[in-house]
Length: 345
Image 1 (cartoon, rainbow, N blue to C red):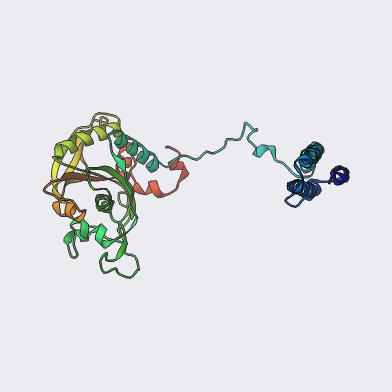
Image 2 (cartoon, helix red, strand yellow):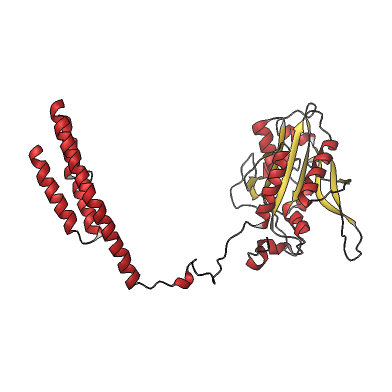
């Protein structure tokens, strides 16, 4: 084996020296140091030698490998520089398109305003001990309606024009549809985690309705749910007043009005006192979200005992709160992908 080392060294160094480009040099590397290369094969054959031969021959092979590398690296750098120089002289390079041109400003992407607000809301509720939950946008009739106390032919279904999926009906789950609300995640969370529950559910929902300045066929909601023992609406009012004050960055006054939603009892509407503060316009109450105590039938559908546990739930349109916070007068601007609008945020 010792007799093979010197010829391999001389042949490899000669091949490196004669390489005219990086492709040829790479072939030399593969020939000698590749998986089946000549130097690699020498290293593999060490296992068949005696301990004494391994020491002497192994050192000789290592010296061969080092000599190869010491010759290969300078040649690689030389050929690489030559290729770069050749490209710079033969190919057109427009300096006006590079970052080194101070007269050219580079456009940078920004996070969509709805995504910004969702992150802000998630952070605020996380600081108040809420978990963030998620669920499928393609839902079944059971989770979107029946489990939420909205059985077939219930008049509340007429309030939510629905996109149904062309798919065979499941005997237990019903038809597939694009969820009209984030409330199905309430049932899924009760089934999966039990109690206590303290979570918010941001997500996109879909309604089959005409598009105008204040309505769209898809929009973003944030749902909230708290279930435990001895829970009342006083807890809800305190948490929501704190959240809204953080969201609008000033102290917010709230009030409750009676409202109807099939999945809560009693149901309420939460209004905020919107201060105009300009042009002599008076302050006014504005509807902000629907809420209420979770209906006993909904608790049962989630596998909970309504005699033991109580809870409240709320839901608001993130898109609508964005319009209030930023003074946006047309909901369609938020989904129009107009950079002139989005760059404001």
